[in-house]
Length: 422
Image (cartoon, rainbow, N blue to C red):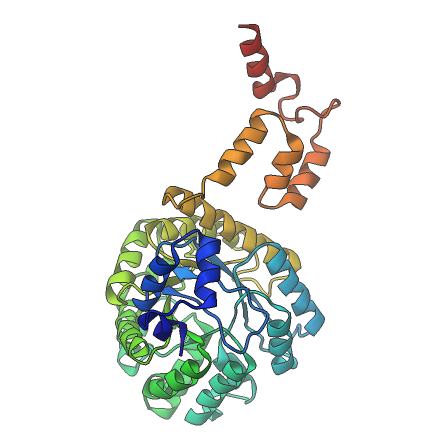
């Protein structure tokens, strides 16, 4: 049985116990949220070295990092190095989006070396096996999914909500379809003049996912790729289909989460979260960003963190990082680290604002260290200690007690001295 089915049968699994301890939540409360579909534990029974996590209502906001090869950069060791950077920077999950080199080998090695959940988008690899995606058969889509599931991935993204009836809405957009999986699926549908095979064969996909308890991440093939297309008919038409598919997945005993935008103006984020939670029946919401402006290539980890923090505050459960390379190219090692850290800052800020139990303790410890001018503790408590230490090394004054910003005018030092004289 899957985690969802076991929760419905009032059974507490070792994964639930692990997550309850990590999240400081009562295990029975956690079990109930899983049984309702409001929390997922992406944990394939084939992924043996996994430290499980929970994603969803009442839990800390989680962060995903995307890695993976491209046709121009396809080195296994480089992808494993990226994986290590993600884990060291404390990403909660990683997705392998490889499209170049020995994709099967890269995926299997990432799973073997990862103690955090691994996700994939199987249609990417399926498309890599042919010169044009239209050469794929409907069975090729399904076999691609089967291969990834049988390798032990913990969750897969499938773009099953993009249907023929949405095509007129797509034509009204400024940017059309910006999701790679969505664009591949759309091209196939238009060429073959038929419905999305991931939708028509959804029951078969559920059977495959259920066998190894793989969580479905229902992809937002019609997520907006610019502010002008945000919250439009195309996006909402897909969201309603994803709500339908959520119920079908739950009925089959399969865990599910919903992917969301994308590029969204700040003032539309709250409404987007409300709509997803309503239309998709409270299923966990996994957002890419969202990016709140279109004008910052090179800095989109910042535009994403701004949107991600607000989205998480309003009820999103899972943030997909964005790196400085977004819209420009394949991220390198440093980009990956910056993306993870930016999203973790957003997630933590949202956890504090939501009043998540214990979230502010980290901030309080940092404040106490600053009040005492305890630099060692400050640096150890930093979200990126290595970077903080490098900055501190170049900004240390002669006696090492204060920093080069204020020097002898250090407010903390002056206040402490003044109060001691009072």
